Length: 403
Ligand code: PLP
Image 1 (tube, rainbow, N blue to C red):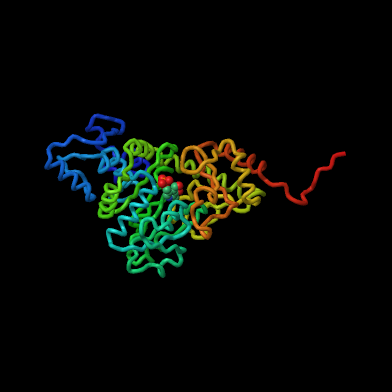
Image 2 (tube, rainbow, N blue to C red):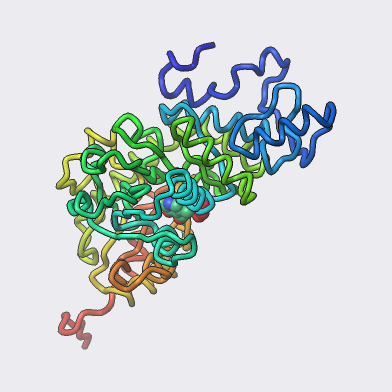
């Protein structure tokens, strides 16, 4: 079956499964081998060499050792590449392992040692870039100032859209136009391939924290990068050398999760739209950050087919109210991460964005909601209760006098 000719929902169900019928199986095969029998020293050695330098296994030499290659991981990579309209993808043990590999691969590949990073970014990405740990020079900037920051030794431009946690949108085409031909990496974790395909807009690398929507059930940590084949080879080489391949069980669960990704994302998005509209009228909420309510860029409907299912609330009662609200929810779980079937609430300044420098830290009045698959009315009721319980008594507010 040629999955390229199918609609997105059909690709999500069938990609990476094309050979299952010929194999006589219906569910995805899971190969947990850490090592593989070698046919002979010569072909085994050749296969090892091919994979350690970023290639695929030798057809007769086998996959040798699971740090280099694994068939269950490779199946997931085929499926994700299809969904991202990319020639290839490479899967890692976490989103941060994927980001680290992208930095190492692009800087060493081109012998360039400068990265331009468009803020805001996920706190872990910001921290990695600011830490100097990978020996690269990083310039942080706004998307509007990007062209002036690109240098002859710039290896990659990194951006996130929608950005974590304020859900600002960045115009991918405009960044690519200002890049001077430098590869642009888009963190597509919040949008998912269901709402946005950055490679169609000129991006060279598309990163996902697969831990989030791709898995969707809060039981896998993983990362993946969709890209061109030469970049995939550079990423596989880094992955083999540093040992950051995704575990096959994680790949199995992520691949299984892809089949329901379109329905999950669309349903979660519909619920998020209802919740964002409801909360935008709430007296305890100063501002709702949600691309579906407020999109000065005009990118919803153009770059992204919809606003997604993440919402950030700026609370009138500031940090104290955030503290009280996160303890007052009952259907929402107070936990970091996002994109799963169950709804989560967390405080970015104290948690996901804790390691970033003060100028990049989000407001302490912001709580972030990841909307799951529960009924919208139940989620609204839970938020109403938590907001009421956490709203500070206003000075000078009328006092009930009883006689
Ligand atoms: N990118 C974004 C947008 C994220 O939200 C996260 C994690 O929250 C990451 C990357 C890092 O992914 P992981 O936690 O899988 O390492």
